[in-house]
Image (cartoon, rainbow, N blue to C red; front, side):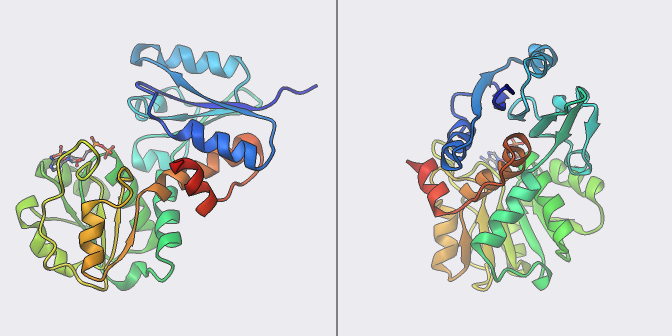
Length: 275
Ligand code: ATR
């Protein structure tokens, strides 16, 4: 008898991860034999614990903070996406004993944007990203691949935005955080990839007066679902897309690889996660 497929998410801390709820919901929805668990892994145990999960017969794992960059060193193969982004969130253990690292955050971002704003046109004009952390890297990769003509990047710490411009090239224009509100008038897509607006974090305070009403606006923050940033954009008439779908969609490729079923991200999925 073959063992039922097992997968999980590793990180530290791991208690707040929504991945077990998401994968658990999909396993029940599709009546699949399988198990998905949260596994706390401290930093200096990363390689030993990953090899142990592989030895136990796990099909794969999701990887979250603080291991998304270091996991690349353990992998036998790193996908082009994960190489570009410089981090991995989805690991698959192959039957012949290899550790395959991939990053599905760019996919998750784009799938969410397209689902939430079906009329969104990447070629309509520049996209503006607030923030220059790990999430911004995945979003830059997704937008560049979609054919966005220019990416306007702004970050409280300008040097991090400049570093991303050096890495990702000419299509990126950096503007100072204090002048971000002026650059907004050029943008047809606007993304908050900072933690501003998250429950317990500071508010997003950049004025949105110059935001075009025709712009599509999205946030990576999903707690609360409707952030003050999204509400302000909606009040201006913009199409807005909340951040929950990015989390849900990034889980799709891993679930399909490990459990053999491509899962849906729909209203039922959202309800199950928010319950
Ligand atoms: P993630 O992987 O989610 O992108 P991160 O790498 O820690 O997380 O990045 C957090 C982002 O939120 C950064 O762009 C950060 O700006 P700095 O590079 O200046 O730190 C931004 N951020 C966090 N708190 C902020 C604040 N109070 N004001 C402006 N930006 C903030």
